[in-house]
Length: 190
Image (cartoon, rainbow, N blue to C red; front, top):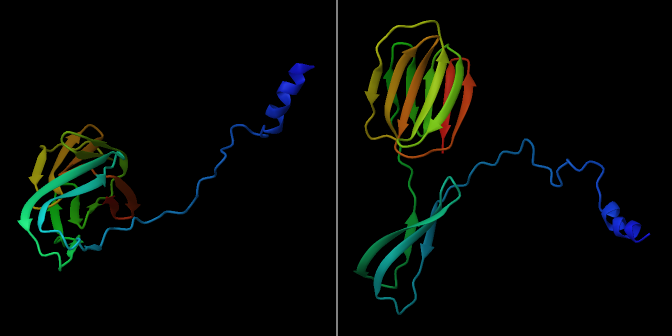
């Protein structure tokens, strides 16, 4: 009899399907990240020397890190500090390869090709995105092109049996999204 009284609380809180999630995800709602624009900071009237500035930030892996910048300069507390982030406008960069054309601009990469993307993955040390495209047996030497003053550092194309591989080297680790297009694929980085 005592056993039945012990089971009553569990029965009252049981769900019909224990594998159904308690919280339902927001399906179809994609939120666009809001980027930092500007902040104005006014120091107290007894501030005379700015010793350092510390930026605390979150990485792609959700680690909290900080970067410290030593200043050690006299300041006038009457004037506020304004911190803002400017976007650098990249000129469109076009790279021509034997089997495709690549266009790079504003953290977007478009690869113009009729071949089908069969796999992709990101590797670290150095940071690079590997893209394999299905194709008939091609025979060409590996082609490597260095890109200057962009987030893309180098692009390498190599022929393999049944596919060709594009390796895009980056200056840092990026999250990426690939969208298929009738003319090729679009890679968006963030």
